[in-house]
Image 1: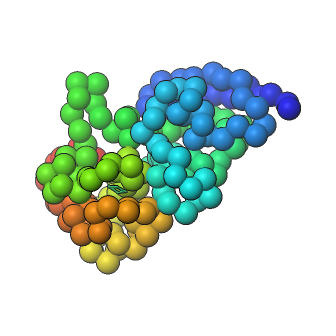
Image 2 (image 1 turned 90 degrees about the horizontal axis):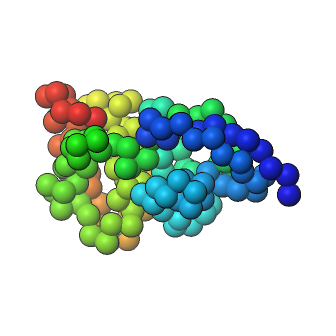
Length: 162
Ligand code: FES
Ligand code: FES
């Protein structure tokens, strides 16, 4: 199996890594960098549990060979929290609206919702539901999640950190 040197910037930290050709970005984040927010759910781009940000765009990290991510700048759910522990508005509203039950989908939901609000600061309920259609939640029934995202949009428009 051939090996490759790659550089990843994750949550502002630069990592130089040697990866195998078949190593997935999700596994590098979880097993090598110990950033376990992104979850392994399906492994085939159907559940959204592995979602991370590449710049401001959401990416399913279970689909990306690590070697293809050379030079990328990524943010995981952990990186949405400031060094002094301040959550972003999406994370705050997920707690406020009780949009978390088992929590397995939550990091992916929060990251995807952050990407949505960076792209579309004032989405309708239908736009939120449509954007999150690739993120599955087995517990909440989605209502609280959608409420949280709409509330986070208002918070961000009022100066909250996204
Ligand atoms: S684990 Fe990546 S989409 Fe399900
Ligand atoms: S809170 Fe359990 S899967 Fe969403």
